[in-house]
Image 1 (cartoon, rainbow, N blue to C red):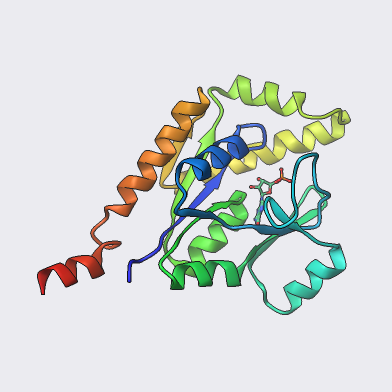
Image 2: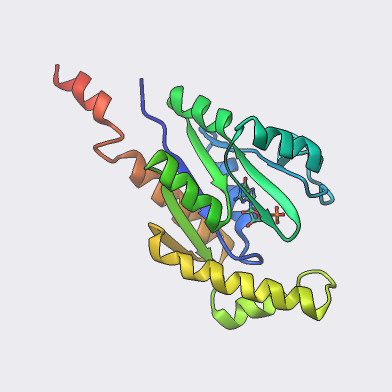
Amino acid sequence: MKQGLFLVVSAPSGAGKSSICQKMLELCPKLNFSISYTTRSPRPGEKDGKDYYFVSRENFIRRVGRGEFVEWVENFGNLYGTSRKTMEKHLAKGKDLLLDVEPRGAKKIKKVFKKGIFVFILPPSRADLMKRLKRRGHESKEVIKTRLAQAESELREISWYDYVIFNKDLDKAVEQLKAIYIAEKCRKAILAREIEAFMK
Ligand code: 5GP
Protein backbone atom coordinates (compact mmCIF):
# COMPACT_ATOMS: atom_id res chain seq x y z
CA MET A 1 0.00 0.00 0.00
CA LYS A 2 1.13 3.53 -0.76
CA GLN A 3 2.09 5.82 2.06
CA GLY A 4 -0.10 8.89 2.54
CA LEU A 5 1.25 12.30 3.36
CA PHE A 6 -0.19 15.40 4.87
CA LEU A 7 0.19 18.97 3.82
CA VAL A 8 -0.32 21.54 6.56
CA VAL A 9 -1.01 25.08 5.40
CA SER A 10 -0.87 28.12 7.69
CA ALA A 11 -1.07 31.86 7.09
CA PRO A 12 -1.86 35.04 8.93
CA SER A 13 -5.49 35.97 8.42
CA GLY A 14 -6.07 37.84 5.19
CA ALA A 15 -3.28 36.11 3.25
CA GLY A 16 -5.72 34.30 0.97
CA LYS A 17 -5.17 30.83 2.40
CA SER A 18 -8.77 29.63 2.13
CA SER A 19 -8.96 30.42 -1.61
CA ILE A 20 -5.64 28.68 -2.21
CA CYS A 21 -6.75 25.56 -0.30
CA GLN A 22 -10.09 25.47 -2.08
CA LYS A 23 -8.47 25.66 -5.54
CA MET A 24 -5.85 23.14 -4.56
CA LEU A 25 -8.54 20.63 -3.57
CA GLU A 26 -10.34 21.16 -6.88
CA LEU A 27 -7.12 20.53 -8.79
CA CYS A 28 -6.01 17.51 -6.76
CA PRO A 29 -8.93 15.10 -6.35
CA LYS A 30 -6.78 12.63 -4.43
CA LEU A 31 -6.04 15.20 -1.78
CA ASN A 32 -8.62 15.14 1.02
CA PHE A 33 -9.43 18.06 3.26
CA SER A 34 -9.14 17.50 7.00
CA ILE A 35 -12.38 18.98 8.29
CA SER A 36 -11.75 20.62 11.64
CA TYR A 37 -14.22 21.06 14.47
CA THR A 38 -15.01 24.61 15.51
CA THR A 39 -17.30 26.47 17.87
CA ARG A 40 -17.48 29.53 15.63
CA SER A 41 -20.66 30.19 13.64
CA PRO A 42 -20.71 29.33 9.96
CA ARG A 43 -20.04 32.24 7.59
CA PRO A 44 -22.35 32.72 4.60
CA GLY A 45 -21.79 29.87 2.15
CA GLU A 46 -20.01 27.60 4.63
CA LYS A 47 -21.42 24.12 5.08
CA ASP A 48 -21.34 21.85 8.11
CA GLY A 49 -19.33 18.72 7.32
CA LYS A 50 -17.58 20.39 4.40
CA ASP A 51 -15.79 23.51 5.65
CA TYR A 52 -15.94 22.59 9.34
CA TYR A 53 -17.96 20.52 11.76
CA PHE A 54 -19.73 23.35 13.56
CA VAL A 55 -20.38 22.34 17.16
CA SER A 56 -21.32 24.00 20.42
CA ARG A 57 -18.70 24.82 23.03
CA GLU A 58 -20.09 22.06 25.30
CA ASN A 59 -19.85 19.52 22.49
CA PHE A 60 -16.29 20.60 21.71
CA ILE A 61 -15.17 20.38 25.36
CA ARG A 62 -16.69 16.88 25.62
CA ARG A 63 -14.62 15.85 22.58
CA VAL A 64 -11.50 17.33 24.17
CA GLY A 65 -12.21 15.20 27.24
CA ARG A 66 -12.49 12.09 25.08
CA GLY A 67 -9.12 12.84 23.48
CA GLU A 68 -10.64 13.25 20.02
CA PHE A 69 -8.27 16.01 18.90
CA VAL A 70 -4.66 15.78 17.83
CA GLU A 71 -4.50 19.44 18.70
CA TRP A 72 -6.91 22.18 19.56
CA VAL A 73 -6.62 25.91 20.19
CA GLU A 74 -8.66 28.91 21.17
CA ASN A 75 -8.49 31.60 18.52
CA PHE A 76 -10.32 34.91 19.00
CA GLY A 77 -12.76 33.32 21.44
CA ASN A 78 -13.53 30.30 19.25
CA LEU A 79 -12.24 26.77 19.61
CA TYR A 80 -10.72 24.86 16.69
CA GLY A 81 -9.55 21.24 16.70
CA THR A 82 -8.08 18.66 14.34
CA SER A 83 -9.76 15.27 14.47
CA ARG A 84 -7.36 12.50 15.42
CA LYS A 85 -9.66 9.93 13.80
CA THR A 86 -9.65 11.74 10.43
CA MET A 87 -5.88 11.96 10.37
CA GLU A 88 -5.26 8.39 11.47
CA LYS A 89 -7.91 6.96 9.14
CA HIS A 90 -6.49 8.72 6.07
CA LEU A 91 -2.91 7.93 6.87
CA ALA A 92 -3.72 4.26 7.57
CA LYS A 93 -5.37 4.03 4.14
CA GLY A 94 -2.41 5.71 2.44
CA LYS A 95 -4.47 8.80 1.53
CA ASP A 96 -3.21 12.37 1.41
CA LEU A 97 -4.61 15.12 3.58
CA LEU A 98 -4.64 18.90 3.40
CA LEU A 99 -4.91 20.67 6.73
CA ASP A 100 -5.66 24.36 7.19
CA VAL A 101 -4.38 25.03 10.67
CA GLU A 102 -2.80 27.99 12.47
CA PRO A 103 0.86 27.69 13.61
CA ARG A 104 0.26 26.54 17.22
CA GLY A 105 -1.80 23.60 15.95
CA ALA A 106 0.63 22.92 13.11
CA LYS A 107 3.52 22.71 15.58
CA LYS A 108 1.62 20.19 17.71
CA ILE A 109 0.83 18.08 14.64
CA LYS A 110 4.51 18.06 13.73
CA LYS A 111 5.39 16.99 17.26
CA VAL A 112 2.77 14.21 17.41
CA PHE A 113 3.26 12.69 13.94
CA LYS A 114 6.92 13.63 13.43
CA LYS A 115 6.20 14.11 9.75
CA GLY A 116 4.16 16.24 7.37
CA ILE A 117 4.89 19.05 4.93
CA PHE A 118 4.46 22.47 6.46
CA VAL A 119 3.70 25.39 4.17
CA PHE A 120 3.36 29.02 5.22
CA ILE A 121 1.49 31.43 2.98
CA LEU A 122 2.36 35.12 3.00
CA PRO A 123 0.74 38.09 1.33
CA PRO A 124 2.99 39.96 -1.16
CA SER A 125 4.37 42.39 1.43
CA ARG A 126 4.14 43.37 5.06
CA ALA A 127 2.36 46.60 4.13
CA ASP A 128 -0.17 44.54 2.20
CA LEU A 129 -0.70 42.25 5.19
CA MET A 130 -1.36 45.23 7.47
CA LYS A 131 -3.81 46.67 4.95
CA ARG A 132 -5.68 43.37 4.67
CA LEU A 133 -5.83 42.83 8.43
CA LYS A 134 -7.26 46.31 8.97
CA ARG A 135 -9.77 45.92 6.16
CA ARG A 136 -11.28 42.66 7.47
CA GLY A 137 -14.76 43.20 8.94
CA HIS A 138 -15.89 46.26 10.83
CA GLU A 139 -14.13 45.63 14.09
CA SER A 140 -13.06 47.99 16.80
CA LYS A 141 -9.51 49.35 17.10
CA GLU A 142 -8.93 46.87 19.95
CA VAL A 143 -9.81 43.86 17.78
CA ILE A 144 -7.59 45.14 14.98
CA LYS A 145 -4.74 45.63 17.45
CA THR A 146 -5.12 42.05 18.75
CA ARG A 147 -5.22 40.77 15.19
CA LEU A 148 -2.01 42.61 14.26
CA ALA A 149 -0.29 41.24 17.38
CA GLN A 150 -1.43 37.70 16.53
CA ALA A 151 -0.18 38.08 12.95
CA GLU A 152 3.21 39.20 14.28
CA SER A 153 3.52 36.18 16.56
CA GLU A 154 2.38 33.83 13.75
CA LEU A 155 5.00 35.29 11.39
CA ARG A 156 7.75 34.34 13.82
CA GLU A 157 6.74 30.68 13.38
CA ILE A 158 7.86 30.71 9.74
CA SER A 159 11.28 29.64 11.03
CA TRP A 160 10.34 25.96 11.34
CA TYR A 161 8.05 25.63 8.26
CA ASP A 162 9.37 23.74 5.22
CA TYR A 163 8.06 26.04 2.48
CA VAL A 164 6.86 29.60 2.03
CA ILE A 165 4.54 30.85 -0.71
CA PHE A 166 4.10 34.56 -1.43
CA ASN A 167 0.53 34.94 -2.56
CA LYS A 168 0.99 37.62 -5.21
CA ASP A 169 -1.34 35.91 -7.61
CA LEU A 170 -3.86 33.20 -6.70
CA ASP A 171 -3.19 30.89 -9.66
CA LYS A 172 0.56 31.14 -9.20
CA ALA A 173 0.29 30.44 -5.48
CA VAL A 174 -1.85 27.36 -6.16
CA GLU A 175 0.62 26.24 -8.81
CA GLN A 176 3.42 26.51 -6.26
CA LEU A 177 1.49 24.55 -3.64
CA LYS A 178 0.74 21.88 -6.22
CA ALA A 179 4.42 21.73 -7.20
CA ILE A 180 5.36 21.20 -3.55
CA TYR A 181 2.79 18.41 -3.26
CA ILE A 182 3.92 16.66 -6.44
CA ALA A 183 7.59 16.85 -5.48
CA GLU A 184 6.90 15.54 -1.99
CA LYS A 185 5.01 12.57 -3.51
CA CYS A 186 8.23 11.63 -5.30
CA ARG A 187 10.32 11.48 -2.15
CA LYS A 188 12.18 8.22 -1.77
CA ALA A 189 10.81 7.74 1.75
CA ILE A 190 7.21 8.16 0.55
CA LEU A 191 7.81 5.66 -2.27
CA ALA A 192 9.71 3.18 -0.07
CA ARG A 193 7.16 0.38 -0.45
CA GLU A 194 6.86 0.79 -4.22
CA ILE A 195 10.63 0.85 -4.58
CA GLU A 196 10.92 -2.31 -2.47
CA ALA A 197 8.28 -4.09 -4.56
CA PHE A 198 10.01 -2.95 -7.74
CA MET A 199 13.37 -4.26 -6.57
CA LYS A 200 12.06 -7.72 -5.66
P1 5GP B 1 -11.43 30.79 10.36
O1 5GP B 1 -12.30 31.05 11.53
O2 5GP B 1 -11.08 32.06 9.61
O3 5GP B 1 -11.98 29.72 9.45
O4 5GP B 1 -10.05 30.21 10.90
C1 5GP B 1 -9.30 30.91 11.81
C2 5GP B 1 -7.96 30.23 11.99
O5 5GP B 1 -8.13 28.95 12.58
C3 5GP B 1 -7.21 30.00 10.69
O6 5GP B 1 -5.85 30.41 10.86
C4 5GP B 1 -7.27 28.50 10.48
O7 5GP B 1 -6.12 28.01 9.82
C5 5GP B 1 -7.31 28.02 11.91
N1 5GP B 1 -7.85 26.67 12.06
C6 5GP B 1 -8.86 26.08 11.40
N2 5GP B 1 -9.04 24.82 11.84
C7 5GP B 1 -8.12 24.61 12.80
C8 5GP B 1 -7.79 23.49 13.63
O8 5GP B 1 -8.37 22.42 13.59
N3 5GP B 1 -6.76 23.67 14.50
C9 5GP B 1 -6.07 24.84 14.60
N4 5GP B 1 -5.07 24.88 15.47
N5 5GP B 1 -6.36 25.90 13.84
C10 5GP B 1 -7.37 25.79 12.95
